[in-house]
Image (cartoon, rainbow, N blue to C red; front, side, top):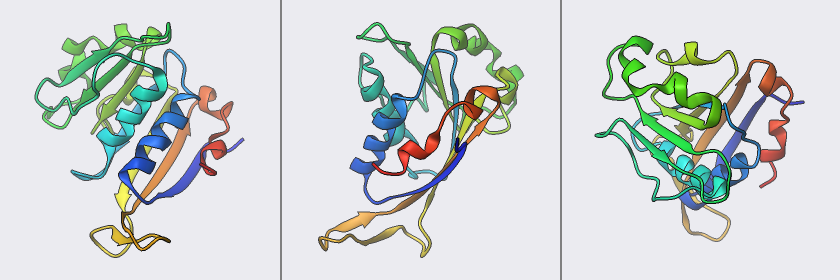
Length: 172
């Protein structure tokens, strides 16, 4: 089983598709930590997760509300989408969000969560999104259209992810 996968994602539509495919691997209690500079595609990936999980409501950046809960429309787990960018502290500052209460029954995605919420679970999926080599990430794809290329690294931590083959995401 592969618990560490690196992908090249050429467009925002492909990033959403990656999220939809990743949603098929998720289950209640999963914690995902998303890292990457502003505009890297964290919310776009999460939008795809929401589509794949069949949740209610448009998945948008929760920067100013800190967290949004999207209930399932298909009897699956709710998606809890957190943006920790504006939070300076660690887990203590996030206690008011009750993520530890939400986690067992939900899929919890925390943007900017690295170094802040790892204590919530021994099992988590770290996703790092960065612009492709060359600076702005823009290039032309095989059709000549401009592509907004991102490099995505997914690393599973803990027993839950040791049992999950992330390599199925490579051929999407």
